[in-house]
Image (cartoon, rainbow, N blue to C red; front, side, top):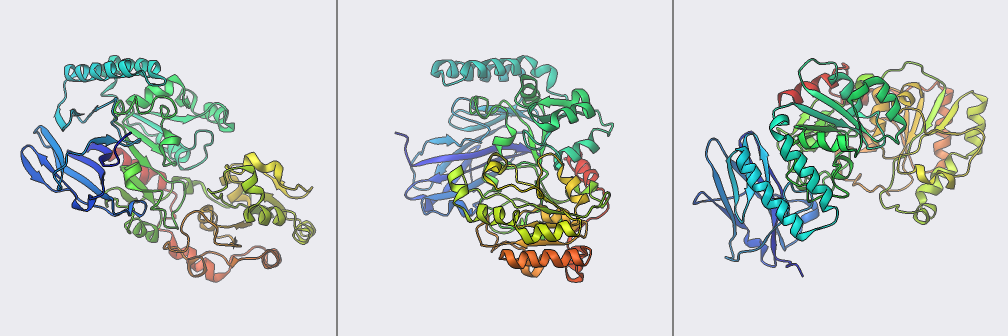
Length: 514
């Protein structure tokens, strides 16, 4: 059985001539902490507090060691004098079977100590064959495929190493988010960089994007995608987890750890409004960029629990906002609730207040009759996580459940939005059109109570907790031609940092120069 007492490594990166090693000591006496012996001298790490690691048995640390032109040898020691075993966490770019990587003409490897040496292809070959022999000896699941990709990486490295390659993606099976809009701008720039957009061939967006970008589209998880992933220097996405981004994760991880040396740039999926430090935590993601769009959001990302530096968090604006306008405005009402992460199966959903409330709303006879009499369409746009369960909802002849329209098309066309906690309300309010927050209970999986954004004092529409009042408010908006009230219009105008349709340009220029 593996020991509870150990030093766990979250990530090892080499950026801007700084070696970063982050992790935590896990032991019964962890308040003692750790220190480093670097080239014979004692050094102290920084220590962080994370909401999900508030335990007396855990001491978080991060070493930041300037490299310059010297070689580095670092040993991590505990103050209680015990030599704890070092283990690599799942998303670390090293593992027990892959203990080196190459970055910025340096070779970083672990042999009981953490070492940084000047790169040579001979050193790389030597380290690679050590890892291959360990993999062959242990023979974990999918090891033959991992060996094949590692050999391909080793053989192609001298030819591919100096090429500039960007891999861009939204969800594996869905585009039309910040990454696609960023890609549309970036692909037009003549910078000598090879750029590819990744999406699975089962997606509705695959054929559309293939027609637009031809050979710049990579089928997600294909051999071609994996090879370009190995050699890309920048991975740019609106999604923030390895499960969405890493094509080796399901089969070959951690056998492929260290075979990539990319930097991750997080364009975000929306404006952060709640305290998401339990998810967007540095020790799992460690991006080089997190895009923010508003000054309150930007400031909130320096609050307790995130632990990112001011070089990482940048106020640039979401690329998809560049294509928001009121073209094609219709007499259309859209209902767009977000998901609840604790709903993991059909039974959970059917018994949930979430299902009962929205199933009732889209079948409300008074709402349907009033909208019909005033020639307003009603669209229910489900969250992607809800789509497998749509057959559970009661259907009627008037409310359309939409799975086909792009989000921005719906934003641009709709006159009124009803949502709950979904950050898509920022997109809609950006267009200065009315919205209503239907918050029947405090049942969201993120901490919406303690985030900087308070719906009742900062929101862009009224907060309503019951269906009767909600329908009454929708009817009042229909009666006034769906005009945003002055109080909410003023909040919108004072909230967003940019409204110039240059967000993609700002993101591109920052990523290009970093």
